Image 1: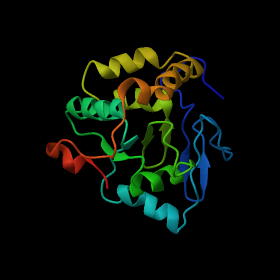
Image 2: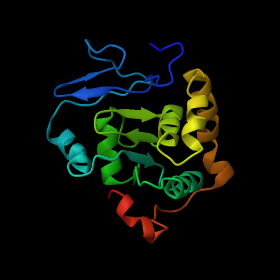
Image 3: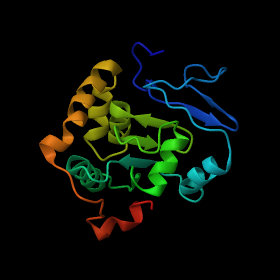
Image 4: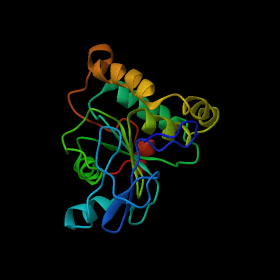
Amino acid sequence: MQAASSFSRPSGSVHCGPGSCRSQFTQKRPVLATRKTLSCTNRTAASSSASAPFATDKRPIILFDGVCNLCHGGVDFALKNDSKANLRFAALQSDTGKRLLQRCGRRPDDISSIVLVEQNACYIKSEAILRIAKRLSAPYPALAQVLFPLPGFFRDLVYDRIADSRYNIFGKKDMCQLTNEDYADRFVV
């Protein structure tokens, strides 16, 4: 279920319409959740509360591990290189993060991957990283264009190696905290 040579390869995405979730590849049939493909729930009270962050602000939300030093560094990097304020942020451990994880078909306690949540799609691992890079200031969109054609399994292998050792190498905070008040409006709580 992967495109051979497309720069917008949606291997980690699912589009959610009223009552169903559909892959960008197979617009006619629902998609089953796999490691790479994220599903979303039907429109219920739980999913409508998860849609609330998009009610008045359509910008994507990056879900990050709120106690991981590497992840905090990544958030700081994205904030500094997102000159158009295209992105918002929420910790995976926050109530908003947990609701959005469920909306994406993931367990609310799953902190194994960064997640990019758009209004109608979710992306994980290297797919999320590259889609985030496409929204940053130059030269990062060009770098994402170069890396997208690499096979997803290879990109995710590298991602998983780093993610699995992130606490050992970069350390861990005792609690999630917003470190820069200048960007407080970019964080969804």
